[in-house]
Length: 323
Image 1 (cartoon, rainbow, N blue to C red):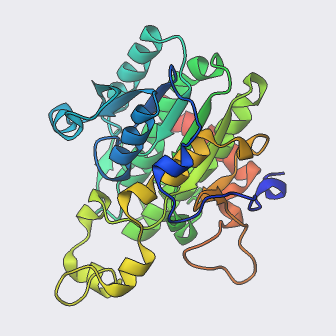
Image 2 (cartoon, rainbow, N blue to C red):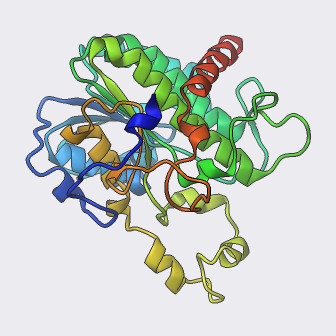
């Protein structure tokens, strides 16, 4: 059971560790990596760190011009390809092309995401956050699955969030067709889906020796907040009345480099051998929430439930077949 593994390990790293610390002594030369959302925020820092460690990194991007500008001059083997997570045909074109051009995929990092958006639809009517954060990455990963399974010791990392605490999967109406749309609960559902996806993917990699992990990167000011008005961020306590980062947020939030370290740790740490499917935070395996959940720490049982993971996988395959 996943609960048996959902316990912190003796990690030498923590919430303020930097990429060069986490990757010290890790050899990535010759490793093939995909990082979605790798041209802004913590995705950009993830690409920077992996490329500096010798990996060949492909960044699929909806806006290749923007990606080229953001990644221009960054040292290492970095490639940019066209892909829009909200467009399943685009996702499959990229994935099939990548699979035909490569003999291995050592790391797939599902980093891209949207948060707290106004109600919008993508694909065949999917709610935007569920459709982009989960279904787009699900289509990418399942199309690439044969390649990942052929790769020795491959890892898949799915970025979830403490936002998973806001909502389990709305099994009867995941796409919010009932008129009750709540942008934060919709975000929470998508982050629960990311965590359950990692568990389902891990089950499908066990026979080939691969593993998958879910990651909460921590709170970081990045373009992820672009849909939030200043007034709302003041109410949340992230900004002060002058519209500047509040003292409380400074204490709670990480820098973008610190924000990518748990991703890097999950992608490379030998401490995770035999612990595939777990949810990680602050460069460690997160503890399972108890009777009195902590808002910004630990993982809720609903996000690491194997039965829910399999149910979501089957539901996602059915939704994808209709797209």
